Image 1 (tube, rainbow, N blue to C red):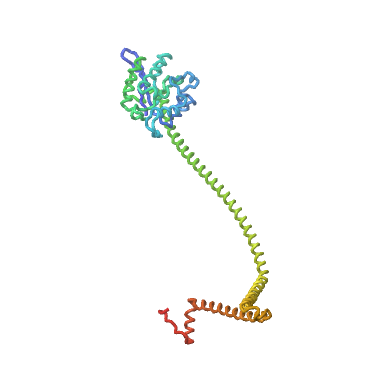
Image 2: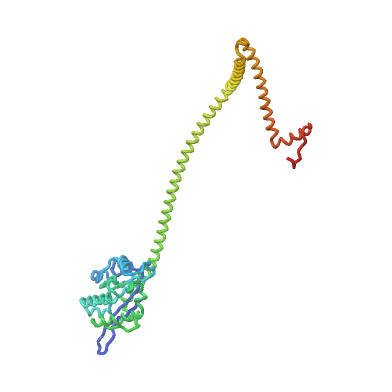
Length: 387
């Protein structure tokens, strides 16, 4: 959006011509800041404005220099804006004003008066909106008509960034009227005809306006692409970090796997040695089993013989040695051996009977045993409900 006072000279009564003050404004979004900086500071040769003569650019001068628009804007936002919320990507961060008149009038002023005019213009904008809100002020002498670029950040007195709240239609009309009154009259300039727009712009100013508008539009697109690129960059960074984390986890798991594999191999070796040892033990046991059984048999026989002898000795002691003498001990031992044999036989039978009783008491065998007893007449079989 732009607002302009016409710049041509008109015939006045009496045959004198009068110049008109030009105040043109364009709203700049964050995406176009770099382009406006490049244009104002002549960082690159303009491709959209053939009226720029770069051989004369050394005659340009700054009234308020600014080498890094983005950094200065960020600092002013931090110092002057009260809200902690982030600035919207499509917000207007700078209002770029062009101050001039028609070429004939500016030439008539001369270099010194031109500079005074531009300095007074900077003071007027600084007083009206606050010197701390003025971003830059640069004078271009390398085009058809000398002109001033002054950037004002639209920050309200209550600390809000809002171009709509400051530069309303009423305010823009007031700028035209009051600037011409406060500054223009001092240099013989009058207020332009209200409502005059593009038709009253000089050809050079019109070209520059279009160039700046194009820079603003392309800058907004570039900003969107930059934001998109930053988002993609952030996603790529997060994906890279995730990939590194997965790689690290896989490496840890691989190390753990290698450790476990080594432990498994070690245990398999231990198991193999243990199996070999057990095999040798079983072989040794099988080899020694007949010997052990024979020893057990001999030990049992020796214990039995010892018991017989001990019994005979006890009986002899009880009866008295003088009654029988030691000569009868052999017969007594033989008799005790036979008795012990009977006892061993009885014990064996008792063990078999005990085993048989346990077998008969089994749930699967007991009913059959009772039926058998009933058959031989020893016991009546029990009915199912009596069991």
